[in-house]
Image 1 (cartoon, each protein chain N blue to C red):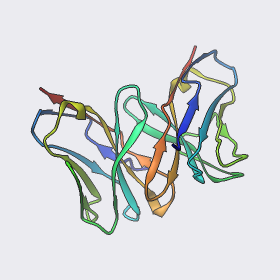
Image 2 (image 1 turned 90 degrees about the vertical axis):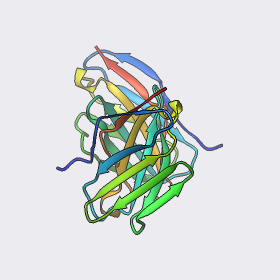
Image 3 (image 1 turned 90 degrees about the horizontal axis):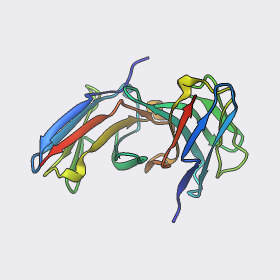
Length: 111
Length: 111
């Protein structure tokens, strides 16, 4: 079947904005999520967006949702070295209670 | 505070042995999941459960089984461990809207 797609790597300078993109597969996904994984740790929920929203802002994080193109993005403003991690998007296809994850984007923040 | 714990954190086993990984959550969530994480594949769903006595296969369920006898626990069993099952395993539980909460992971090596 189709995969939830993310680019593998992103490198930005400290203080710049980061934009991580995701193309998901199921237009009927009720919620879409962004998770962060630091080395040796589990996944931590960063934020989520309900499918009837176009945008959600939470402090330095902005999520944009384009349902027509099944495109989800996460913008991190004023990126810090502590933001270096792997970021995963996840969908809940068919309104189900299961989470399908993308391959993850490794964000490296350069000082 | 509610939490989700996995044990053991690290395990080395031999090919052909049966192995059980434990997952225990105190969120009182009905939904629980097992994923494996491999480089280049992100997180792939192995099995999931929507409640006691309910279990469902995910996309990579061959060679794995789960049972759900109570709300808190979802143990994952590898019937006959194979080298291809060397991976990091994550358990999660969820409330759909708030997303899935993950354990710290179990690193399994099959030699």
